[in-house]
Length: 344
Image (tube, rainbow, N blue to C red; front, side, top):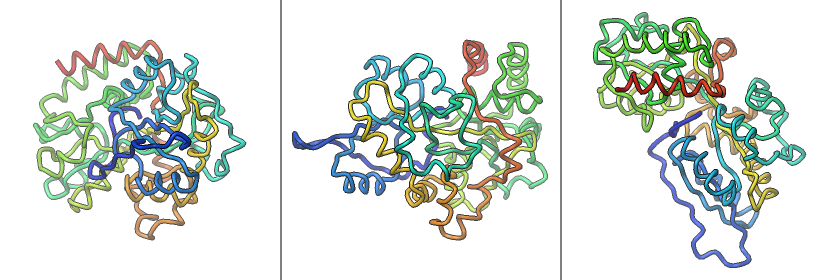
């Protein structure tokens, strides 16, 4: 959402534009690493007789900085989390998406469209979405010990808790635990969240966003924050790993297609977005990344076991209790100040 790659770390591919003939069209993609099924990219290349050049970044900040340095040129389709899109659109970095060329918008879950960061979806469309909740090792921890964010502060869990290495997720968790919005711009509330997080320090064993399921699989952490897709993938190796949608409300995130204003291939970029929004291609996202797809018709292309897996697909009630992470404007500096204090 944001941040560092949230998907499976075992998928590896590198698609480059080496040996491209002069007449061959190249579509330049900029995304998190290992965050897109290779087979779908190859199918797009074949259908449209083009070459995809896939470049990667580590986090939203790095993506934003590079586009700024390049004057928004050099890439045709880029991916960004919710709270960066409003900022980038405001700064004139994004092209308007031609929705007349999008043939699957009617099948997108309505709750994913019209969000505060882009009310008319002029500049972005959903790629992947998910939930930040809690994972725990059920061999070591009882089910009734972990029902919400506040349970992470239990003194029985000293040196057992993993937190994501992400300021908005961690502070969002603490704000939710205290009954506040994860998008608070009130410094008193953010400071209160910092003080609560400071009290959590004795329980924290590691911060991890590169591969947040690994500390559970290796036994370094027994419980803590987790993205639902990573929890699903980790469960394949570790059946005893459980996932909880916190009773105080989860943190919702969404990564989105955007087209830089300086793209040299906007029409092809729109074709690529539309191609990836086909339900059969969205189903491949679910299978490889473990996150729910925006196209609700994608479920029909999945095995029955995946269609009904609550770790991948939260209920409407669980979604309604959660909040999407939005741009907080200048208050981001307040978050960064207290984040540095927390990590120091």
